[in-house]
Image (cartoon, rainbow, N blue to C red; front, top):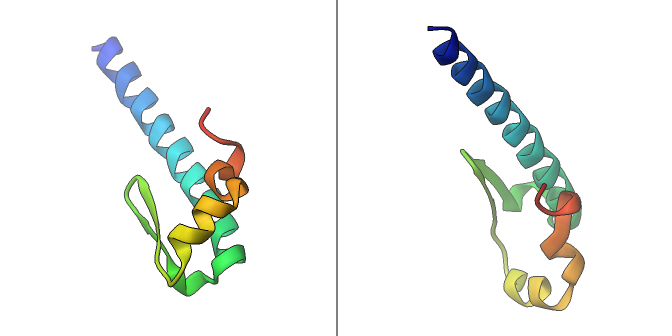
Length: 70
């Protein structure tokens, strides 16, 4: 019983941290591409627009937004 409660609490905290990180990445991308090109979907940040792949390949800072994975 207590372990189940602990696991649920940990999952809730992990989701909150993930959502916080997603919002930070989305804000950084919105500052680069405009907010109309950014969508946050569950555990993903989607970027749409012309030339985005070429820009991502050229600019390494886009691949490491929000400090990378931690």
